[in-house]
Figure 1 (cartoon, helix red, strand yellow):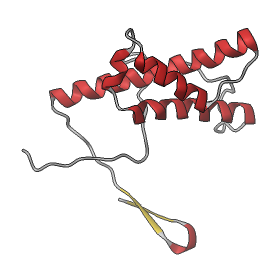
Figure 2 (figure 1 turned 45 degrees about the vertical axis):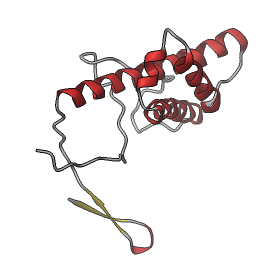
Figure 3 (figure 1 turned 30 degrees about the horizontal axis):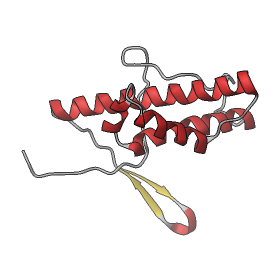
Figure 4 (figure 1 turned 120 degrees about the vertical axis):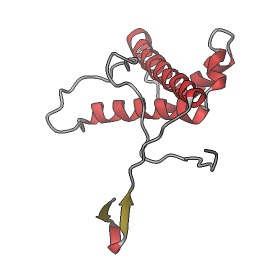
Length: 141
């Protein structure tokens, strides 16, 4: 456990957990990671093509509207099986990447390039992570 002093004398604690999902949970996690990666890449393509073809900026709100459309079509109806919160978070990460790029706020020693697509398993680590997550703990053995 790490301790960190926050604002006005408050203390923040960090806990590390290791999860061992069962096969059903593991399959759901892989589907969620894949869907998040797909949504991120589609959002990136939407932004890039809108700028290339029409010189129009697409923001987070428009990307979320596109996500609603993707979830309602027959070809990409499989997105309805995935939590919309995780998919929207992928679009938020894309929006933050664009904001940081255009403001010039990238991590130190980083190569400054526009946001790129996310890779799949075995092609690098493309799994989205959140610093805060809701975990369900059960007593089942």
